[in-house]
Structure formats: structure tokens, C-alpha cells
Length: 223
Ligand code: JBE
Image (cartoon, rainbow, N blue to C red; front, side):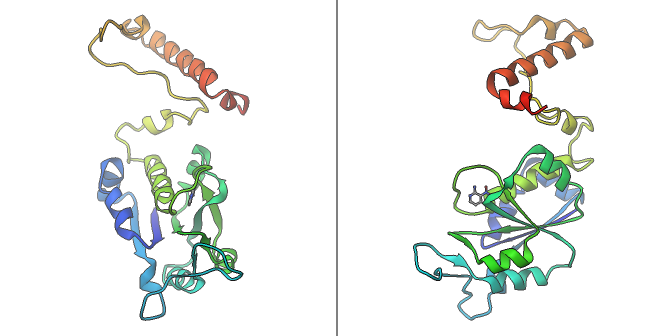
């Protein structure tokens, strides 16, 4: 899988991917993530990438040409995703579907947004990571990259564990415990200490269901 990220902060993207599972997956060649600086595709000597909106108003709009120019410089056929609060909500099932894409291009906007014409002609898909306003699309792009990398076979040590992730079964994750057996007077549920695999599995299923009912009943209704 190849992921290109178009951004005015390529180092932010590169730096975050130097840690943990994304780093290991990239080092192992399971995924290639390339961050491109949109300013490199600006067509004037001041490397202008934004301008004020027609009709007036506060904030700046990304000009269409640098985005079009950057996209044309990439191999054709990639699935172009714009990260925006106006996009469809990002969920585990969207991540699962996108993880099957060979070539993904993530476009990060800033300020007020991007020129509508470049969005209409070049963007295939729009995704939002949540109903709040961020400074730009970089953190959302990193959220998407991280969620996709976890799903690539071999990215996670235990082959089973991505499938066992919270949300893959439509439920929140169960509670987990490690040593010591007693911490500040609190003990560990007996079933987990029983050594009986079936009992442990049953406890975890029940706990996940209870937590989902208490915290996110909407997830149970959508099953
Ligand atoms: O969710 N998003 O993709 C966003 C992008 C840019 C700004 N705010 C967001 N929430």
C-alpha cells in the first residue's frame, strides 16, 4: 500500500510516523507513506498557496493550482481523500474499506478550506474524524494513516489482534488487568484468574457488552 499526504507541514506527518506500529510497518516495507509539501507546487516565486475568499470574509482559502499541480505529479489512479469536517464520518468500517486501497492520497487543507473547483474535480472522497474544528487536516490524516496501518497484515505482531480491536466486533473493548493481583485494595475479577480459557472468553464478552451498553448504547442499536 502507498499513501501520499499533501500538506503544508510535511515534517509534522513524517515526525509522527517515527513511532510505534507505524514506524515498524514502514521500516518493514508494508506501507510507503510519502509526505509532500504543497508549497513545492506553488507557481509563483513567493510560493503562495492561499488567498482571500471571493466575496470577502475572514480566513484564507487554498488556491486550486498548487493542489492540482501536486496531484498531477503523482502516479494516476490513486484514491484522493480530503480531510474535512464536511466529510463522511470516519469509522472502523471506513478504515477497513480504505485499507484495501492500493494507493491513497490524503489532502490536508488549512484555514477556511480549499477552492471548491479543485475539490469538485480532483477529490474522490471526503472524510471527517469528528464534529470539532481542528487547525488543519494533518492530525485527521495521521489518524487515518494510523488506523489503516494497523489493518495491514503483518503490521501487528499478533495476527489476531487487529481483528480483536475494539469496534471490529461493533463493541467497545473489555477491561484489562495485569499484575499485581491486588492494587490499592482492588482485586482482579476471579474469572480472569481461573485459568479456564472458556471462562475468560465468556467474562470478556460479557464485560465488553456491559460497557458498550453503559457507555455507547448507540453501537448496540446499530448491530
Ligand atoms: O475531521 N476533520 O477531518 C477535520 C479536518 C480539518 C479541520 N477539522 C476537522 N475536524
